Image (cartoon, rainbow, N blue to C red):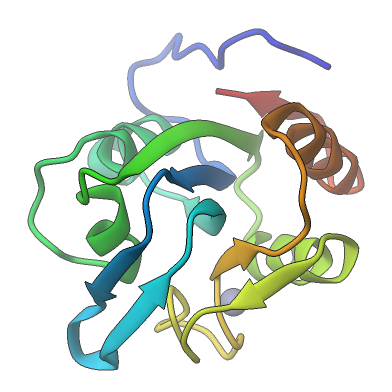
Length: 161
Ligand SMILES: [Zn+2]
């Protein structure tokens, strides 16, 4: 695995697709805006998105936002990343200006055992069922990263963050 951090030689300007791994250490009952409430058991959750702009909408800017607890609620995943019972663990990303988030999301959902939480969760801007899922297989973080790495490698050269 390539463990080099992605480096921003030209400021926050990288574009790409990413999956963040979140962990709920305790069960959470959470309201995802207008989509409604859901009970989230402990375990790992994956959110797959893309950041194809500059500054705040660059890959670096977007990942920094996911790591930050304090933010205005803009996307469904924000309700999870701002919750104190939910931890940002790692992210995997692919630097590319191609719009790959739905393809990678689709590939992840077939190669890993995942469960949807609510229909359209994290997928307000596309036709996918969801981009925010619970990992239903029993696996540790290293195993999960290895599986994500395998899927991402189908699309290019991934990096771990
Ligand atoms: Zn999609």
